[in-house]
Amino acid sequence: MKEKILMAEDEKELNRALKTILEFSGYEVKSTFNGKEAVDATKEDNFDVIILDVMMPVMDGLEALKEMRESGVNTPIIMLTAKSTVDDKVEGLDNGADDYITKPFDKKELLARIRVQIRSNQEKKEKFFVGNITFNKEDSEISSSKASFRLNPKECEIMEMLVKNQDRNITPNELSKKIWQTEELQTSAVNMYISYLQDKFTALDANIKINDENGYILEKLV
Image (cartoon, rainbow, N blue to C red; front, side, top):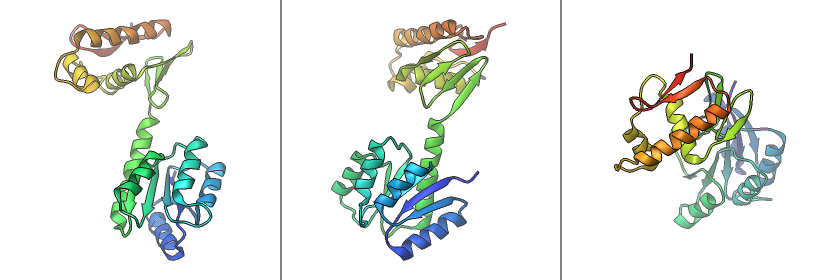
């Protein structure tokens, strides 16, 4: 299925050119010409990326961005603008923009930035299935047919490392560097969070456990 892009750009020639480029690159494009049209479009459909020009009639890009975020739209948003001052970019980012690109720009750069946002968003939505357990990274949740548990940020990061490295033992030092971002080994903290996860597995009647004999690795119970 093609990824869907919502674009709001009031300059008709540029709008037409961008739509052609994006469609040629394999995307499905919904083209709008002001912020209000873009906001309305998000109420009718879901998109993989939203591209908003800042200077538009009826409702500008920053107003549209703010309204989208306040209404719960969490789609990656790239702002297009002829302005290049730091304050302009900061305002957009503070209001929930994911990226900013200044006109004039090369189409290759725009396409690259779109790919980055799509890839990042897809990673957030990843689900992993291990034994009878489902790990939903986006919702920070592990579940079984019996129940589900919301994970705190560190539990979620550790769980992600475990499910992505099921073929090898992860050392306590690796976890320390990744989760606590320090060279100093956080032995007691690592063990504590591993214990929290294992307790949740037990409560879920999981048919997996965390083997901690030579580091940490997920292991199916016989």
